[in-house]
Structure formats: structure tokens, C-alpha cells
Length: 138
Image (tube, rainbow, N blue to C red):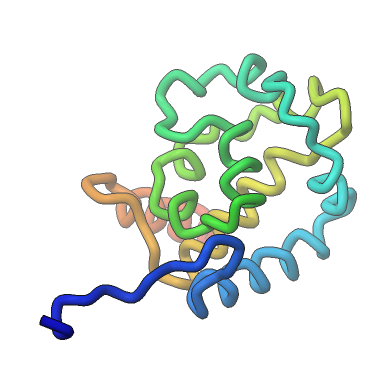
């Protein structure tokens, strides 16, 4: 009977993996000029409204910030959102608080690659390999 007991998650605490991901992400955000603006997000949704591809995302840019604050980075990394971002900076330009949303999504993408966390049934290998080839050409 005790073999079927699952580990209980205590609200407000992070798993070791989530803490490692969070610390790594915060280190990357620290290196983004203006990255500390992440703390200023007021969850207004302007970033999502400005995003031309948000309709294809499984987690909107606003929800990305909310999930980060809730301590659920792994859900963000395993979503398609960070791979679908068009890098147009519309979210960043329109943000009333000056949150560097696009750069934060790039930091999350780097974190996903480093930790080999990818969305299911999404051609990320094709995307990453074409990026590598393109970088070599330049």
C-alpha cells in the first residue's frame, strides 16, 4: 500500500529540477539588458494582444510570465511557445512596463536547449539544425 503513495507537493516550494531551471533562467535574464524588467510585469496582456502569432501558441506571452512567477518553468520549456515566437519584438515595444518579453523568450529557448526539454510532436530538431547550418554559413 505504501508503494503507491506519491510524493506530496507542498505549495510554495520548488522541486530540485525546477529550482535548478529557475536559477539558470534568472542568470540568463540577468545578462539581458533590461532583463530585470521582468519583475515589473503587471499581467495586462498587451504582449499577447500585440503578438502576431499568439493564436498558435499553447501558452501566451502573458501566461509565460505568470507560469514563471508560479514556479512552473518546466511547463514553459515543454510548450511550443518559445519556438513559435516570430521575434518581431511587437510585445516588447508595446509593453507599458518595458518588459523585454522577446529576449526573455530567447533566454527560455536557450534554457530548453541546454536541458533538452522540448515540446512533444514538434520539429525542434529541424529548426535547431537549420539554425546551426545558417550560423555556420554566416
